[in-house]
Image 1: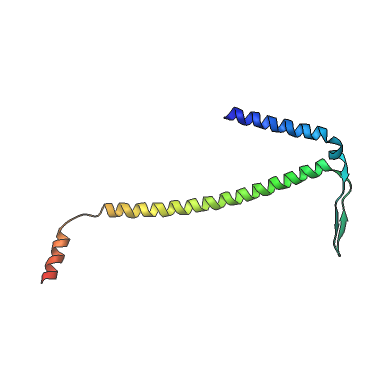
Image 2: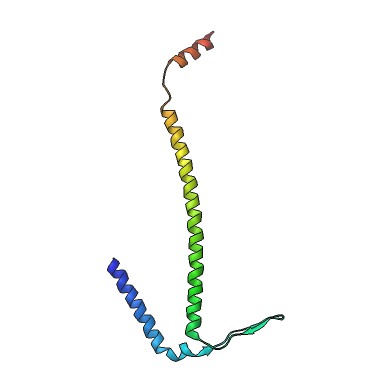
Length: 115
């Protein structure tokens, strides 16, 4: 299975390389972005489209990483509270198992009821 993952990864890298080589002129063509608000105006200088794609990919990767960390910490907190609850229930169960089982209490209760 591990070899299959490596082969698939190499094939995807080869596909990305082929697309990049065939579209080289498009990827290096300069693009500029313009932001125009009433109170703020900004325009970037020409940057290659490949740089825009890489920056966009890195921003997406970073945001997914932050989301994953937040979710992981939430799940760890939930696991900790569930383990604490399970430990409490185990303690309660063990204390109930250790109670002495005698008929003395039952007999004395029945005699007091009859009187």
